[in-house]
Image (cartoon, rainbow, N blue to C red; front, side, top):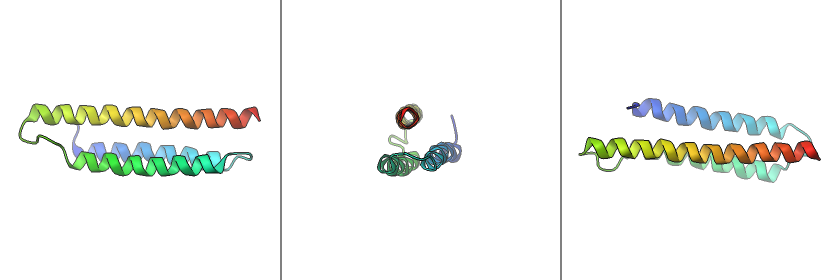
Amino acid sequence: MTKRRELKKMIEYLSGELMTEILLCSLQPETDMAKLREMMTRICDMNDEYRRRVQNPSGTADKRLVKQYYKKLREDFGAEFDKIYEELVLLNKERAEN
């Protein structure tokens, strides 16, 4: 199982990568800045939420429950990361088509 510190670093790194992509996208002309701001807010909220969830596992007495908790946390984070990334890709496609 991944250590909590490493899990928090992974969350921070991937959130940072999304932010970098959004900042690079914002430099392009004809980009919808309102959508980018909304995505940046979602990334910050996602980062805060998952870092907080890493710190507060439920069922700490039973190692099996803790393992399931962190497995679900990683799956949830991956799904939310993918969702935001797909929206960023679609936004870039829309900008490129215009």
